[in-house]
Length: 269
Image (cartoon, rainbow, N blue to C red; front, side, top):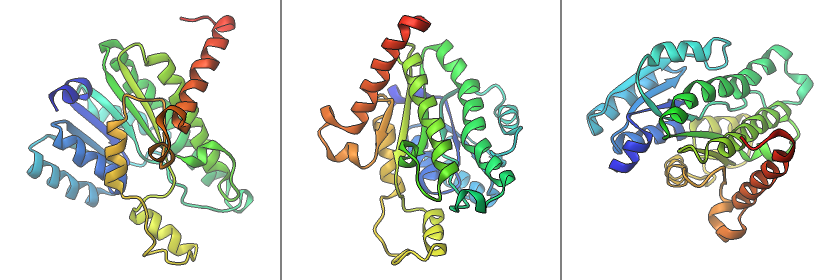
């Protein structure tokens, strides 16, 4: 516990913390003694979570109520965090609220999803990652989706933006792995959250409210346990197959091999 707090504390920022996997991360990190910055749009849900964390774990909690799809999202977040030392940044925002064919949603709405899943991810990774690299310790955890691995009908922009985050995370892992900063992409399929259940109901999925789905708490625990084994964890495949031949290990070897080949032309610094 003390080693974890030293490596990833004293503060963790959790973007998308109001419920589901984000809230599960908050509970697990607070239980390990980390103070938490909780970021989401839903003020009431954040306030309730803040109360739970303070009472149960006696940690400090800062609430930041904002929409991460806005162009000034990172600037506002940094202003709220102030001079707090952030040792762990978790980006858990970015679900697709549309789930439509590409032309059935406006360019403006797609632009909002693009900003949420790409621009804000890039900005936050840069802002919070720089001090971690300078200190020689810390972690970046990007909660993504298996949709990042290829195109899917009715999920064009979702797959595209999740692919951006996946490639960013894997590249940062290659750059920071020898500098004491861990980077992990957590690629999940479905998860038992109110957002997921609501989406399934709207899409008239049979047994939408009773279907067995992975629990948010289990996914968050798995991600924290595997944070040092980046760059990518694919759930549930990486928990079911032999670690030496798992999809996540294949991603790791891919990044290492491609980086080594590219070094001939772009340098190895």
